[in-house]
Length: 391
Ligand SMILES: Cc1cc2nc3c(=O)[nH]c(=O)nc-3n(C[C@H](O)[C@H](O)[C@H](O)COP(=O)(O)OP(=O)(O)OC[C@H]3O[C@@H](n4cnc5c(N)ncnc54)[C@H](O)[C@@H]3O)c2cc1C
Image 1 (cartoon, helix red, strand yellow):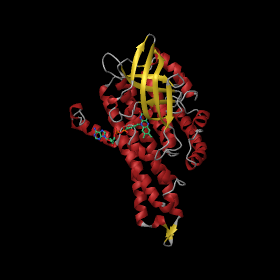
Image 2 (cartoon, protein in one colour):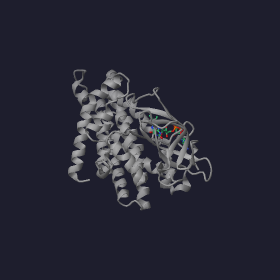
Image 3 (cartoon, rainbow, N blue to C red):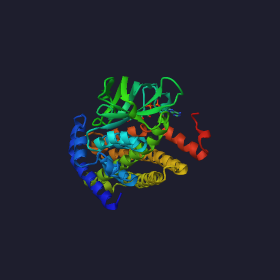
Image 4 (tube, rainbow, N blue to C red):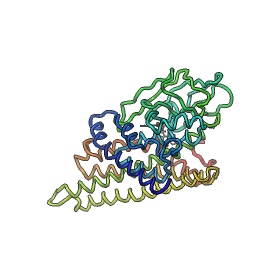
């Protein structure tokens, strides 16, 4: 992407963020889904940031896309999670592993906002270990028939098409990936409302009961689904890390403004040393996180330029896991400190830090829990797959 195109994209993202802010604040306080994210993202042409222009998108490299997601992350983890679901783990696998037919069928429409996308890997009995999934598929003539339940899926209740994973009912037990249409008979979703945060974003479970899809909707080669899922998580984890960087930036801004304004014991609380400690630590969270996100984005772009290079694949995978683990925890720390700086007001969803604290907690769970990522990093530095603790 040229510097001019990158600048234009980031300006469009900025305009989107300014427009979405009051809507998101109102929806959050009223505890309801923000149905303006898609229309406003469409208006500012940011629904296909990573998709090449010939397929209707903006053609952003990962470094630019991460900057865009960091900016969006300031508006809340719920807003950013929409983009992760639609773009980082929705458009990305279709773009990377899809046939030309599949790309043309879904990506231009996704960029235009006519098709919202999602990624369905998790099931009620298969979270950290997706290989324990129970969803199945069967080939019948020129169709695949899918059965199963997917759980905790971002955008799952608003998506038009979902990248979905299942085992065959017969033959070698290897996961395959598909793109399913949610308007097809046999698809039913239920939005999950009992959440600790992100009330403005959609999280759903869905059931596939003899759901038929055309054979062309197989994503990548049959039996290659697990590789596709893991490859997609590299993209997804960078999006989470970038969004969390935005959360930290917003917490820092809010903390500085409030601490300079609020007076106690005869002076702005920003002049109290213990309040300054919180501000210093949020700034530390910010600079370290920015470096981790940038490192991961560079590694991913290096792999994109040389996709067959296995060393670069490992580096990108590790850098994304390290960034996601570090920045999600740094954002949790930053939001907690920002709440503390604001005292009683901080512990309220009327203010941004309280909302960030509630929302950002999930970033230590989805796209690989803290524990799973620590195990992954440890196995890598110990010497590779033979050191995986969960073998
Ligand atoms: C809001 C939200 C949105 C989500 N969006 C999506 C989405 O879009 N698509 C999707 O596919 N999924 C999504 N998920 C699911 C998410 O990825 C899973 O919740 C996550 O992978 C953890 O799985 P689990 O909840 O089943 O927990 P479990 O796997 O049951 O883990 C429970 C605990 O055990 C720990 N644990 C498990 N195995 C080990 C081990 N070997 N060693 C040490 N500790 C271990 C875990 O770290 C965790 O602390 C979403 C979840 C949430 C909450």
